[in-house]
Image (cartoon, rainbow, N blue to C red):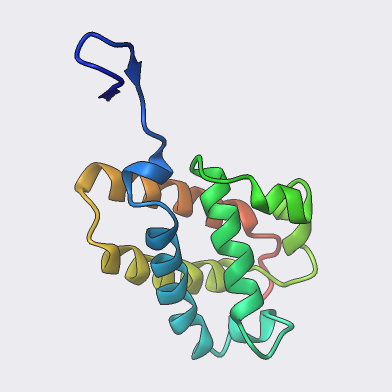
Length: 136
């Protein structure tokens, strides 16, 4: 906890601030999409040939979720993650590939253990929630 002065009221940092703000989330997403770019199952799920628009959306979403700027909602409205993923076949294989690329990206950040586990727990829950089919 931060204090505004020696005897001042406590001011808590958001997770976004604790982990380094925009620069950290940009590094995470860039590392993640480097893996996705070469993945034969995940890459076709991205309509743009260039993954940059998807990377920008994910960066904005994660920043907002973790207490950063509300730019994602300002630009795109409510996240509605399940609805936005419905057009794609997100089966357990796709989920596991997504998690593998994201795990590698999280490890590149070299966060303190508590922040790493907090971030990873959310990403893992989110990935499991996006599964919308068990078809191969």
